[in-house]
Length: 504
Image 1 (spheres, rainbow, N blue to C red):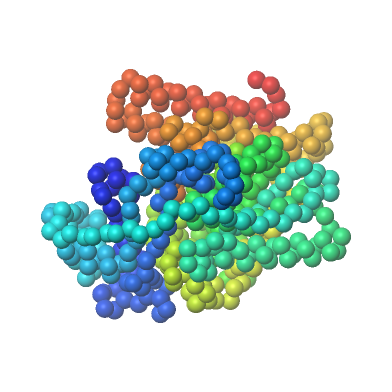
Image 2 (image 1 turned 30 degrees about the vertical axis):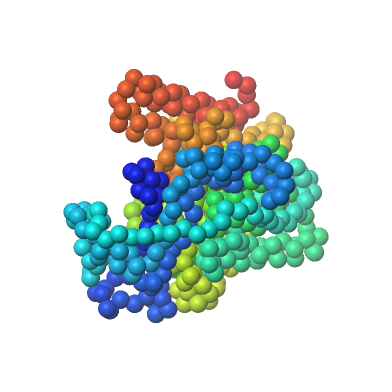
């Protein structure tokens, strides 16, 4: 939005949270909002980052270092000229302040779909007649962040990693985002510690990660992945992320790369649904959220693992995406925030909101921690990795689905070889050059679109090339489309070859 405003010649941008989206239904004067209802008050301000990229902006595509240490960085001039930086000042304001500004604007009426809710002023496109002065006062400084890790070394395959992660930084109080996830991860850590004291050790190494600076641009996780790229690419089995554990009632909602689908279903059948003891998490997932959404884009800390090095990944939460949110938008955390978690990234995301509207008994937190931990234990302890690529084959419609029962007796090769194929197949979808114009995004099958860094697109390079070819209709643009089709086809062939264990 701000990037488009800059491209159109704007000197600054004001971003506000419209009461129609975040303030609840009902006639003006009769609406209820927090603390009486879950909705964002008219004075609430939603904040976020405008950086159109991931990681430390001064070290794109290579690892950063602590402030004061010597490492290669972009200069301030190079940053200012980067397409990833907004380059104009932007200020988030509340619905009340936004309406005050809109009342002072003239010009043609905005389209109907842009208008506010009942009682809102007529939204006009401007320019003027009012003049708004925006003064930016700030310092561009480098700061040091700290990730925190706990490692349980594997007994038989210590060089294979199952990674669990959540970020702990928040824009404000962050009761939902991210502290609900932090609470669940600490619960898992405590359970693993109790197992260790009883003499248990996992077959494979488990790494528990608390990321810093996620809200700024996924900096903590991205820089760690960039710094350990080669080792993680050859050793990481899966990355299991939870950012928001609970944002209300309505069932288990996982997002994952397809080879984890079957494992998610099996684990969710083992956990009782916290709101309906006669049901399992699987039952409520099927009722509220079929099918399992795909994890892609840059919504949270799975991005570097999946998009940069091709590690199978998942993210999950508990709560309902309202009927008003379209299926396309259901992969978008902003759409989630509008309907079911309207205090997202505001001062009202606090313990009181969670206790009243998110999880009054905190039993949903326990259920999510349980299924999260079960998935991690299966990946860490099963002799044959529970990764099933039939879902990928069905979804892509490019591979012929085969019956991968994965029973050891059906194979004459070693268990380690089978597991390596299952672990490495996702890497086949990685292209070292990355997507056209977005080299950090290297996954050819699932990524965000170039117009929406949050949502999910299948074959993002092809989709972007089609849009470009339709707009430009030049020989070069159609050749680019053909190139993207070939790149995607090669990625699928590479993944297939890895699963088969053959050279091409």
